[in-house]
Structures are given as structure tokens and as C-alpha cells.
Image (cartoon, rainbow, N blue to C red):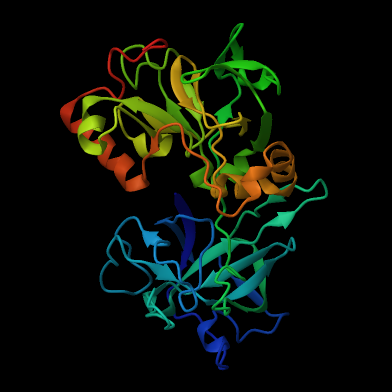
Length: 388
């Protein structure tokens, strides 16, 4: 899964402390009352591909598959880009607090080197920013929005130091889950219905198992301000006919991570599967598929069955909520408790629910999109209809 990480770049090196830990932690030389201003910093983002939702320690971590740069990236004053495929790590950083009491982890980008601190990138003129989740009164988990125009103070240094438990203290990525938006018509046993009118127990038509009852539905509203500060949350518009003739039947708007079904000869040649699932954001840029910025914000809605399913949304097949570890983490404690009460097996650490189709990685999805664009072929073949 891909995660978008905020990067701040400065014209001068960022100060640190002098202790064994503080010398690696940005702004650790500041007192807790000293203001830290970021208004002069340049804000950008990088994409990391990771198989879990935590930015592990480069020193203690035994997981060799996470935190891979998706694209060539220049940090700070580096003379050239760090190549895609480089693995990042960061076992020491600082915790900062904004005026609203929200906490953020900041750390220098560095290369993963097993059992070592790792080489820093950017000449200490760039930091990665990770929001720390806050649990609300109703039990939901929210991630604060980083606003560099605000004022911050240093709280303490943070590190991941347990070799036996590499997750301990590791910052979470701000996750996202596949969601529909209000107005999406979902095919049910009694005909198409708007997603916002559906309730648990309603029968929805699925591609593989016929009518299935909804087990759980959740939603979250994102206002314009949040979408301005977190462009990775902006929805993807798939215009009518963008996937193939008549598909979707009407404009479809989904969250960036929402996967759509692709069925084509190109997919078969590339992945040895007739049908695969691709995140909508990896198709952005193809004709008729674009990123939106809703003027009044929007509400995301997710729908869960007793297994991963494909449902008809605005006439094309897309996924239901997939209960992998990342999606569950994104939902927050209250929602997770509801889902785990319905499906307690999801709490088992070795449980890996099967997906309805092969899930493409970000790199695979973009390569597929480029191949389709180059060959001028639709993402969904002409025989791909409700009964096909």
C-alpha cells in the first residue's frame, strides 16, 4: 500500500541537540517553551510503499519489505535524487506540538542499513512529518492536519529501540480506506440505491456471490480545509465511459485508495489474471479520470460484507471494504471494535483475509495505466457487463 508523507525543506540546516539521542533529533536543542516556526519552509510530499501502517526503526526492525520510495526523490540540499526503490528508516526523531495540542513526529530521512543508524539524506535541511493519532470522546481515531503556518513547540525526543518488538514506538502513517461518495448508486436486490441510504442488513448484488447482506457501514466527512492541507485525501472522478464503453454508466467519485475492477488482455499479459483490482488514484491522468477538489468538502462511506466483494457502483464493478490490517487501522478504535465484534477472527495476528481479486501495487497499477494509454485500449473489455 502507498502512503503520502509530508516533507518540509529548509534553506539552512535544522539544529539538533548534543546528547547521544538528541544529535539525531530535529530541534531537540529547543526548550519546550521556545516557538518553532515553519512558515518559511517549503512543503512537499513523497510516496512510500509499505506492507504495514508503521514507519519502523531502521536499527531494530527485522522487516525487510517496508518503506520503499516509489519515485526518485531529492531531499534538502542533496546534489541528486535518491532513486526509487530505496528503503528509508528512522529510529530517532522529535515530537512537536501545535497550538491545538496536536502532536507530530519529525525525523531526518535516512537510508535503511541493518543494525546501523543509516545514512542521512538532505544535509539536515529536510524532515519527514508524521501526525500522531488522537482518540476522540466517541472512541474514533483521528489524525491531525499538519499546518506549517501555525506555531509549534518541542515536546521530547522519540525513538524505536526494542529489537524484540520493532513496532514499539514506531509512528503510524495517516491511513485511508476505499470509500464511495454520496450519490453513488449501488445495485441492490431491489434495484439501484444511493450509498447514503443503505443500512446493515440490506441485500446488495455482488459479482461473485449474488445478493449479500451488508454487515457494517461507516462514514467520515472531510471539509474543504482538510482537503486543502491533505491533497492525498482528495477524491478521484471517473467520468462516464472512462473505463470502457458505457462504464461507468454515470460519473463515479471514489476515494483515492478505492479499487476498481480492470478486465483486459493487457492485464492478462502483465499479471496472468483476467481480472485485477487497481486503486483509482493509480489511474488518474488517463482520459476521463482526474483528481477533484470539492468546494464544500465531501463524505466518504465504506461498506463491509462478510468477505471482500465486488459491487456494482454507477454500473461498474468496484470493491467493498477490504479488512486487511491497514484498513482496520484507518477506521479507528470504535469502528474496529464494532467490526471485530462481528468478525472476531480478524483480531488474530496471523489472519489474512482473501481479496476478491489480485490487488495491484502502486507501481503495478501505474504501469498498467501507462500500457493501456500507450495502446489506446479500454480498461474494461467489451464483454465485461453485469452478467459477464
